[in-house]
Length: 409
Image (cartoon, rainbow, N blue to C red; front, side, top):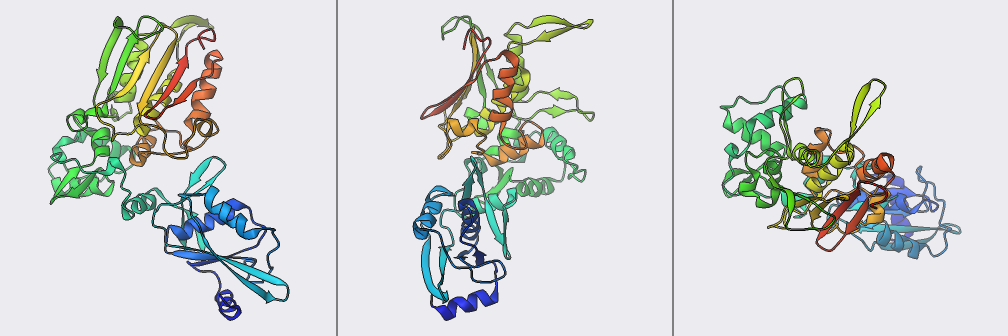
């Protein structure tokens, strides 16, 4: 880019494909701008130009290497931006143009402080993408989530209409279609990505059946939880209880909010409650029961397993195992790329199945911050009995292990 071309760009100001930045910005600030361009139509950051268009010049040593490191360490998937110097745009002041084309692997994210954030470019600003915008980027790039895939043969009658209506009313949507309005229901469920158009017909998505299906296991056999209670500290043929927990992920509630039918989260907690022994103590004049494992922690672990497991792995359920000294919940599928146990402990956020996360958040199961390991599981066990939960990542599974006493851990 020659001097005349650069001055013309600066004169026209920032827009959806151009942003000005001083040289002294932090690496995540540059990453945010590049990610927003990648997720739209591409663009250029002019390093050494102030917001008002005044030319400050560049001063950072090894600036090009620093830019390349930003593309490698702060942008996911990694990128190699194009760079171009314009020297002496004003006497002794250089400007570096950092450009990216429209990303071929959208959506791109900025990685900072242990979390990934997806940005898009709107006019001359970069802002975080909404849930709907993020979903559209996945679909537009061909990276359709497994849970959004169509399920052949699963028409509208595969859904539990009671649970669907309960969910929508809970969101404040009182204008749900009448039960007889099948076209209206199909349109509504397509809009919220619980159904999709495939091979000339509207069918349920995998996520739709997992959440609201009458019998999810009929279409997605790996949709349940295998719950086992062993008598000792190791797996054995002798078990105290062995159950397959099946059904939709979400519960059915009455108008006042009371539980009518359990979802998988409640069924898992009920299994644990029936197969562990509470201790009792007096609190003032009232008797209080204390369970071996705190309910809030157990629910968080179960929800995490349900919404983050890899449902493309068939032939295996989530495994919930009670032992004499511990509770283990094992989720099929390794951790996604860039996710580590240390990152989870420090608050790293990720969602393998975004639709499941979103709807379970609507029910209040998922921490709005998406950092349940850091803010619920670890502090919950420390407060309960002073133990530290084990988080074990393996190639094809992820296990959370809770201890029932400090002597067991």
